[in-house]
Each structure stands twice: as structure tokens, then as C-alpha cells.
Length: 107
Image 1 (spheres, rainbow, N blue to C red):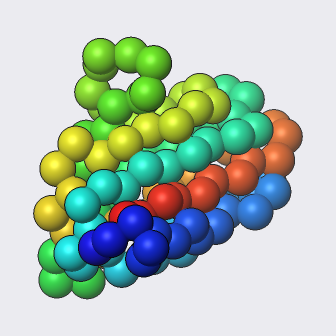
Image 2: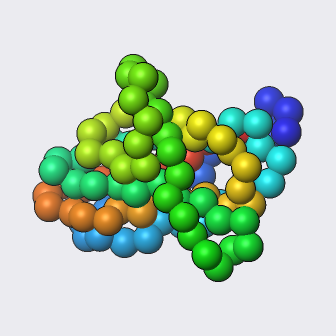
């Protein structure tokens, strides 16, 4: 996927409850990054699927660390280490306060 085909999709907009994120097709993507804002003791779980039915947790790395995880509890940009999926999503698995917004960049 060339840079001109890069796209940003909003998965959660000012979320105020736990919920699954919007599913985004990523076939052929060279890179996938999530941007999380508004987390306040909340947890986001990164997930991917090949068949569109069975979702698994996927490892991501926050841009300012060297630690890999399939969940996040802090604002930041997280990139997928192995973008070999047909779809990805970021689920807001726990919510406690505030408004959470999650975007994904696929290129």
C-alpha cells in the first residue's frame, strides 16, 4: 500500500463506555498505528483477525518505549509489530472516566 493510499479511521469518538472498536480492513498494509487519547484508568485491547470472525490480541509498541503489549492504559501512539491481518480493531475493554478517542492509521 503506497503512502498515497494511507488512511485514518476513527474507531471510537469520545467514548464513555466499554465497547468494541470499528473493524478496519488492512489487507496489504505495510504499517498500522493506533493513536489513543483521553485514557484515564481505562484499558484498550488491540485485536486482529484473518477470517473476520475469530479475533486475537495483537502486540503493539508505544512509540516512546521498547515494551510490547496487547493492551494500553495510557495515551500515545502504538504501532502493530506484525501487520499480517485482514482486519484490526482497538476495543475499549474497560472505561472509568472521561472521553476516549481512538484512531488508526493504515498505510
